[in-house]
Image 1 (cartoon, one colour):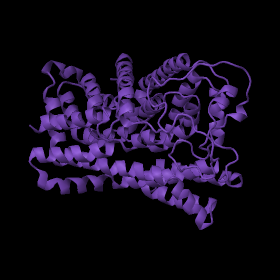
Image 2 (image 1 turned 90 degrees about the vertical axis):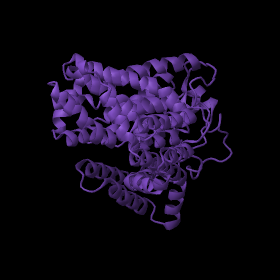
Image 3 (image 1 turned 180 degrees about the vertical axis):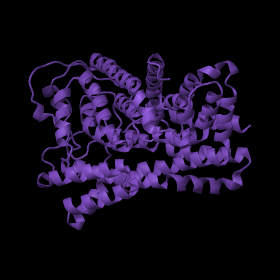
Image 4 (image 1 turned 60 degrees about the horizontal axis):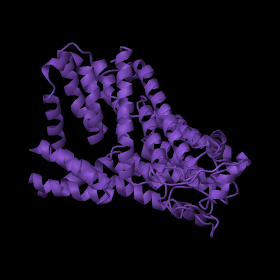
Length: 478
């Protein structure tokens, strides 16, 4: 019964948000609360929620201060050279813009943190998508898949969890998987190219002059993080299309062609904004490198690192208290939206775990594996990693389900390392799971409905995961 109710709860949640009958925050709270009562454990709802909040509180704290830190870094101009380089590559060609989104997300993902990747990627690319009226779900989908492939880095989380759960070396899991993961990343870039060609056919090929004439940009400091983020924005500039325009795959826009324009005119971020601190550029760069190094080396817990980093960034770049308050207020909308979503997700995960639904669902899936599939447990694990890492947290899958799969594999002569490698192929899909806090940073900054993102990305993310799995089998890795 718990197995059926668990799947029913997840299905109800996904259907309601994709049909836009409920907001994600409301669905994350109300649906599990209702099913908790159905299970007959309504009296324990408070305990489940507190346990869920306690487990996700460090993540919420990390996201809150990471948003402030990287928001300030973008305000003061740290990422302007990266933005300009990407814009010079992309120009006003929709195909190049989508490919550039995949490349930028993959590069920034080297720090191992999805939230950081999405904040930088969206901040750089949102002005282009908005200005050209491109589909914003293409941006969020491509960024999520590129980050999902790179999330398999040993310091990204899943690989370390698999190594810990199965008591093997993370390097022995990751290094042999590099060829298969490279094929997966190539698949994301090829998919970005195809989606970009589709956008080019829909919009036509534009030049910079036309892009500038089409829609003057009104958000000048941190475009795409939410209303109110651009202190000093040019009031009175008309924003074409509204906050949500372009979020669907089939948004309309007319084609155009002409010549002229210069790369410097198409900045995305206002090059004259009052918050720029060019004299402090190298301080900010060194602070960011030190922060990322400390995060990778695990010198301190990540929430503590971002808390200290945000405090230093604010104090040095904006020594006057009113200026610090203005920067915090500028990013408050995004902080509140994301942290609220994380704590709402804590209700969902708390009920799933506390009622035992996760355990029953996992055991049911493992028990349904036919005996004849025993020698192919690598393939089975890879296939199961797609739905299981989407419907439950990485912790639940790697510490709860993976050891059972590994034990079943060993009974049929399949090595533990092979099972561990197969377990990480579902990460491109996992990064768009409603249980991943970082995805709310992505859709929130891009002003995309979570349901729209889900409907667009799931099919492509599944395809990318299967490509990685197929490459792993072809190369003899899995």
